[in-house]
Length: 256
Ligand code: OOG
Ligand code: MG
Image (tube, rainbow, N blue to C red):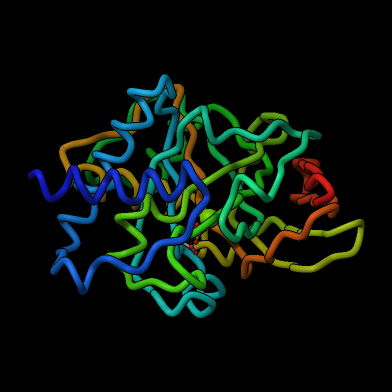
């Protein structure tokens, strides 16, 4: 247990100080179960600093992401209010190690979801949807990790930007998305790339969380996963994501 707390401090401090660390899993002999325990302990440290747990993010739900990172098991991480970057706002790369962005569909829950749920039940629990940009930032050197490493590092959760919540479309399974830097498209995809339908990401979240004795609650946000490969941020760039029928969301990286 002490081991878990000590390693949670290592990943949390790396995030807090924006300083890269070597990978942990092999050296420390960690299991995937240990990694989620480290993730939970690192979130308890954020909560002790005054942050609030407000939702979850799913990872490696698209082939594009799995191929880019060389990891293809589904993972989740926890989101806190301290990770929010305002739509239309600014961020500074100096608070991050090597941040990247990816376009995602965000879901807001109006009902709890727990354990094995079907697609229809899962989507019925969704209050609203929004275009989102996830800012991922691995704390590991060179953005390289194993599955166990990335889970221990809260699945690279670092920041996220939400556009306006919209009425959910009848079918969210094939909405076009464009990520652009300074108005030029850098990634183009579709929500179809996310497990064939991003609602499946929600179904998976409910199932995976149940394995840890947790469930999704009303009012929580779920980021369903990057539909395209992630793009590295550079100082001064304006980032936007547009989702078909849902509008756009964006922010600017401060000049160095
Ligand atoms: C891990 C997080 C993956 C996604 O949307 O697939 C993720 C990473 O790529 O660093 O957020
Ligand atoms: Mg993501």
